[in-house]
Image 1 (cartoon, rainbow, N blue to C red):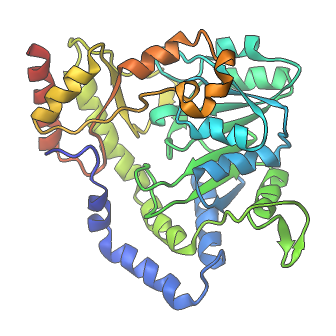
Image 2: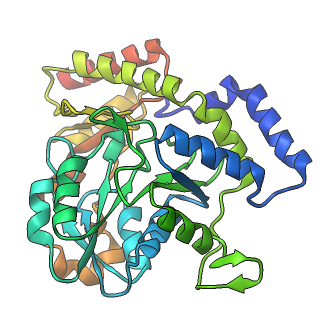
Length: 366
């Protein structure tokens, strides 16, 4: 069976370095924050061309803390993509704000900047732009809207470590950029982890305080914060993997190039990449009308696929009580019914990629 993603292969490639990094933390006797986290924060900030990076417990907390850091409060409205992983919406709900859904560009699946204007109301305070599947959203166009209406912009870059927008790495365009280091991400820990990068010292300071019980000084709590700190062992592992990130992203790009070249002409809608975007292919997502049929045939041929995501956030039971506010989102509904993610990862052998391609061709002929 060709796996969708072989997470164990990443450890096998870096086994000695990862073991050494974990041993270093265990021997240090310092297991909360400390030098290892600070070192990763410094290195990741440099990588992202950002002035600051703050490590937190996970990607959802990165979003929640960023919203709190810029002052989003109960009753505010935050514009979000209608199609994204539900964490984007959950963060807005967690601070008591209201997610306002905006449809995507059906070609890129990222939020359509031309649709944002009509979603703005007097209660709108921020926009969250998601770099879905590792492809940058159109930040200049979104920033233009945000600045004209004096809105905060937060980037959900959970899937986009290393991606570039108009030649510049994602990481410092917005007021805050939120990252997840869930193990399957392009830069993945061996457990949960997250971070926020920013050029704002005020935002960075607020998140450092909020992640640590609302405290700058032990036993003195200025605000009601959280316990959301990046673990030093995960930070040490991330430092090892960060040194390989560009190379591993290059391997993903090579697979995506083969898919794009050799799947052209089949009854699939392939990913569209704008000239200004340099995606890192966290996922390679195609659209197909008879998705379940294709997925079943590929499984029968030994090819694992996944669906990201079978339900849009507003279709989930979690948002059922607000269903009346989320009507007419036909693009997101259509994407949810048609998207299929093909195997891709930095350790996927060329033979496996060719086998996936051959299986898709055969499945298309049946």
